[in-house]
Amino acid sequence: MCGIFGYVGNKTAYTEVYDGLKKLEYRGYDSCGISVIDKGKFRTIKKVGAPDELNGKSNSKATIGIGHTRWATHGVVNVKNAHPHISKDGTIVIVHNGVVENAHQFDYDLKSDTDSEVLANLIADEYTLDLGKAVSRALEKVEGTYGIAVMHRDDPKTIVAARRGSPLCIGISGDNSETYIASDTYALPPEISRVIYLEDGHVATIAADNLHIYKADQAVEFSHKITGVDHKYNAGDREGYTTFLEKEIREQPVAIRNAMRGRFSKDFTNILFGGIKLRKKVRRVLFLGCGTAYHAGLVGKYLIESIAGIPASVEYASEYKYKNTPTEDGTLIVAISQSGETIDTLTAIEEAQAQDHMVISITNVVASSIARLTNMGIYQHAGPEISVASSKAFTSQLTILVMLAIYIGRKHNLSKVQAKRYISQLRKLPALIEKTLDICTECKTLSAKWTSMKSCKFLGRQFMYPIAIEGALKLKELAYVDCHGYPAGELKHGPLAAVGYHAMCVYLAPQKELFEKNVSTMKEIMARDSHIIAITQEGLDFPEDTYDNIIYLPKAPDYLQPILAVIPLQFFSMYMAQSHQYNVDRPRHLAKSVTVE
Ligand code: F6R
Image (cartoon, rainbow, N blue to C red; front, side, top):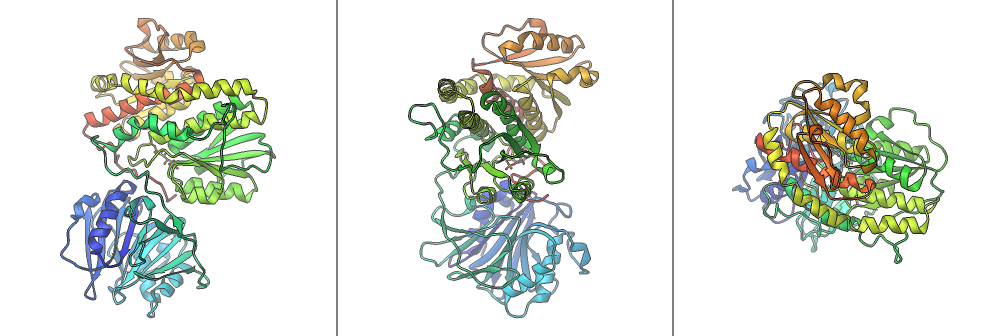
């Protein structure tokens, strides 16, 4: 949520920062800005909209600068509230991600409605020729979360960065002559392969050719760990697609192959997860996640129960930390997060770790905060997901969850023979996804037909229930249609009352053994003059009076059907959004990684 980028070196800072912000715009795109120090003065440009608005060219030759792309938390979207913010005395400029929760306690005459401007003033008040110390002292006074980059007008060689709960990394050039600061390694130029991940509570004083990192509260410097960064998964551009979303939907066969690569034993009877070493036998699994990742956890619950044969549950990470969740010895907590930066999931993990639970993570971003915090986990290797709506990350998570269920099952009662059968079916998945992508062309016609829908219900039983709520979330976030997902059997317990003349339902019914049940529920809906788009699998002949339109997925075992069934829903939502000319990669009010509560 919000992107930060900074540069100090020998190139034109404005251009370097602009290029970095362009890559970060998926983190927030309601306003943006860049400040450089040029001949003893700040030169600041701020705009409403995405970084494109900033124009990559500047006549400033300054070699130090910071920038920001914003997802508004405090204050409406306008130029005044866009970052960077400058202190009242004009000496400090700051870009800030996070929330200063006690901003109201400080009495400054502010130009903007942001908590970040308070921080700029606090730092200016603390400044006595050492910017790092001023930042440390100011941060002692604030409550809340932050990732910041700060410059002082009279110190054109230094950027100070600090972090608590909001990610920041520092990239160093091969010859040590340039240093970058970014809220995501993805934004660093490809030639930067050495990175330091700033830890919570740390402050870094960064000059072009030297770097000091210390704990904010102790001012004691310590040696920092430089990590390699692999740019091989960098998305580059849209590669011929008009949107990142379409590119990412179509990348699903590759993402799923990458999720499986190197993870089967030689005889295909077991799963190899190099990143997991559990200290106890797993007796129960609890999944944590938010949004789409929560839906993955919900599928995970069905998978663990049916394949591994042990109990499983799922909690919204944002709820878990505020409630008492009774668990038993041997509970494995599996935190799922594409970005690895979601603050709700991060803090839920901290809570679980404080209770001495075994915690592993499933994340797509190598060395992300969640990956580092859990220290044990499974990387998705799905490649960067730039579009705000999650697509390939979700199906890649589901694939990993099937493998996790087999992995845990093998430590319980799952026989070699059964495991081998599951694995052989799983290996056919990329080909099934390719087939599904082919049949999804009809989703465009369907979305054109239903383009004026104002609300929609998504229904499904068993493995299809999580896909129903994921489908509802996709259509909601991309096409702004009011949608809800329900287990189909719940219809009679309330929602049916809202199914009236011309109501729209998407009904997920690919399971053979639930055929009769689904036919009867679909008839109940159609009898109320409503409309159904049915999603089923080849070979299931639904009577013609049970749907308006029908999509046939390729035949697959029931536990793999969620991975196929979500694909037409992704396309349908994308085409619906496009038919309204909405920006499918950047839905209104949302940002890719949610690093504030
Ligand atoms: C929906 C979507 C969000 C995320 C959620 C968690 O398409 O993308 O619901 O799934 O914000 O994000 P991560 O997985 O990064 O923790």
